Image 1 (cartoon, rainbow, N blue to C red):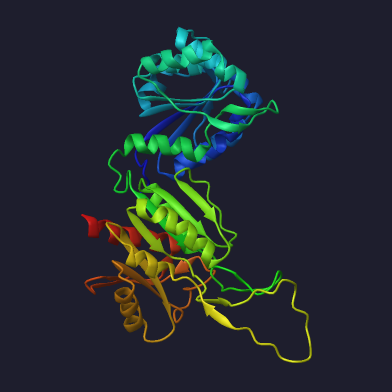
Image 2: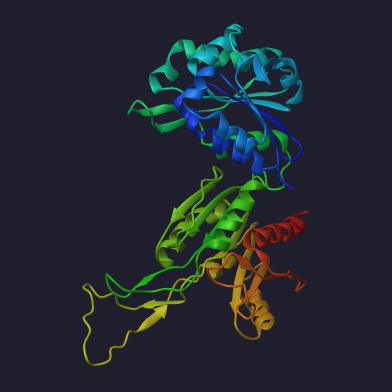
Length: 402
């Protein structure tokens, strides 16, 4: 069930370049379970095709007070639209639309819906930096806020004018999170900080070669997305991977070696509520790293290996009020080895992975996990997507805290 299940969202799109993001916003809202209908200003059609929005929302897109059906005019009832919506989200809201809303002008269907709507209204401004900073626009946004509307912040960055500054519309995921927070004020991880390590580490042999492993980071990224959707602010410390996230609640810190991961973890660990060591950290590294590429010769070479910093053990030793979860990937004596690791590293729980099960392990989108609590109670889950595994893991953590 999505975090917006059963929520009717009316999306209003005004005529600015940021309207090109509207299909992504529609998809993001629907992905979270909402029903979406779209109303556009006539000028918005210059920036995004109504057909794309109708296809994604599975509802007709309206942009005028009347439509034509079998050569007969049909009235698009702005009052009905306002009554249908649980929330009216206007994104992008251009300078012209903000001004009209603040002054009560009504020269298109979007503004008519706004003036008659009784539901909560979210406004995502979008304009160039000088327009955004102009006193008239600042006053209009203050006026709209004083009416009880929720005026969202803007992003700072590259703008259509070629300049850089404040004025960009928030990204679709960030806008969706504002709506999600409104309808889910008691998300189980709201205001919690979660640290997750993910992916492999690479330990250099020379400037070209390294010691690594097959970890993809998929499980760690799934954990991060689930935690963020449950309301948490997530710090994701990740080794080399092709996985990506654009979730506004996730801060990614990219590293390469175990020591780099340790330094990032050490910095943030004291301030988090939950820490999950899902990374496949290399256990050993070369004692000496060659300054230049080692040339191939006919004789054998040997590389002396030394232990890397044990990041999970460090967190267990320095644990205060954090819930600390580790992972164990075993090929034999799975339960015995996992329980021994749980106790030795002072963990609150450990997730056991096995390479014995088809569809589980490295680089695949599914996994089969066993969750072992510090009291040695065990919960085994059937093979499922890594997102499903992440949801099961946080369900166990939340039950522990409740």
